[in-house]
Image 1: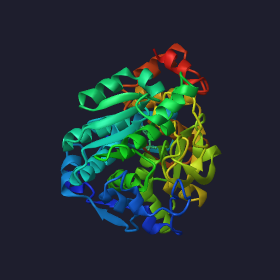
Image 2: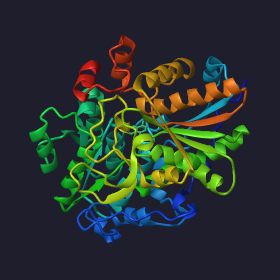
Image 3: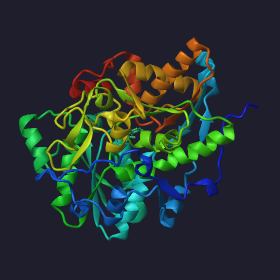
Length: 446
Ligand SMILES: Cc1ncc(COP(=O)(O)O)c(C=O)c1O
């Protein structure tokens, strides 16, 4: 039997988060206050986040210990598997050795639970009574709904309208975990009502949904806000993915030439790649490649500048690759990749040439997703399928060059609640570039 899975034991679950900030050649620039545009005092974030998370957000320490209560919950599903995709390699006739880290093995089906647990824990420790958040495709809302239930905190989710319509079972699972959920733009907030006045059929965007969740938090003193990506503390929490993957690659006797992950706000990409970037900064050869949709190309076509994280200009300004905070992306099915910006840390690594980025159209992504499903058996989340498409391109290049490259990618989630999109793709009704408007994409999925 050929070795295919590289399994760790529970004692291998990382005991600390890895913080790339400590190893970056230049320190990150500070966020700016949305009103004064002056560097933000971290204490000003307290209406939004518990102090424990603010400390992590601004920490320069390389290693931050993981609390026992969080580790106990990680132990219910971690370490996640690392698998050699031998059947995909054979289908591609490539000499490349392809490995994937499978974060879809978490109870909610994606990497998002890694940070949801940590965020709910710090909120519960500081007596927060409710958490408001946004969700794109629904993976983040699902993860936070479960984490809220673990720690007894009610969760309110603003779900981007186009995904709310495309994925009815996402709503059902979020309800099943006990959270409340509203399509965004909603009539619950000023930010939502303003958008609806101008655009009654707005498909929504992550930027709008963030505005609604932030407004909900700042107008209710017992409520905090939670973000599933972009911020430094989220990158930190996800670093357990790459730390495990490094140990598993060592078990396989390999080290990646290239580490690939899809990119929405940057957390799963940072999660798998930052521990490898630490090696790169210390002189090891490794490429890290972020894969994004060509219809929402923040890294490949965005500008590197200060911008708001949300549409209504309620959040601090952060320096990032951005398409502009009023950008409304087409209603592609990879709803979790429809964000106008990028994590400031990922942006800094791209600007300084430490990482690479590439963009892929929706139809190519679904083609790669089906090849993966038919060879490896897992139907990937449309977001994760961007990493598969990038992997296929790398593997084909390896075949052309006759090089036995080692490719590691993060399979950030499964797509079992995205089957409407797969049906639409197979029926030929899905827009190839995702360039239709959100409403028509939603209609296609029905
Ligand atoms: C399965 C999956 N992968 C990736 C992403 C993209 O987010 P991030 O770039 O923060 O990892 C999402 C976001 O919803 C997702 O659901």
